Length: 180
Image 1 (cartoon, rainbow, N blue to C red):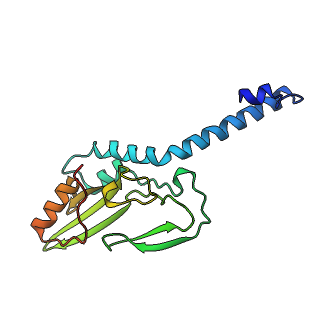
Image 2: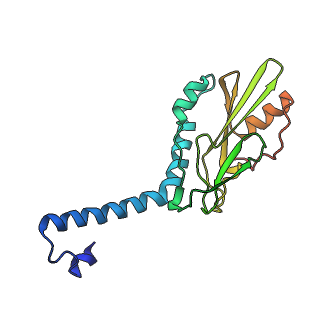
Image 3: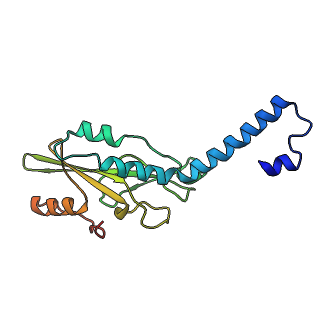
């Protein structure tokens, strides 16, 4: 902004016009900065919300705390709007990925899985909470599983989920990530 002032960018404009131009430029700079940090803010917000959860909370309480906001174009990606649909790594739900964007769209939750074992229903909500590698892909290691049993939060984390799945005889088609 100072460079524009020194170069006379606002010279010859009325005072209200110069102020409006300066505010518009400041807004563009702020939006640009916010856009590039939005994926990090999305992760940080999810991580902070996970820490607010307690076992025994209902599914509605968990979803209320975690939120359902989406970030369709993080990191300022410009996509054509075209998407491809793929199965997630568990083969449970379908995920839509932008064709021309490096970064995937971010959703809350990123994916879900439901397993019926006898009379119990296990539901796992996977939230994006960390970046392991800046490769434009959200991997299992970057997700935090929130495990619900019959509609109530039973536990959080990969260790809890893989141990519970093993005890309940739930076959997971994925290897748990490195412990976090």
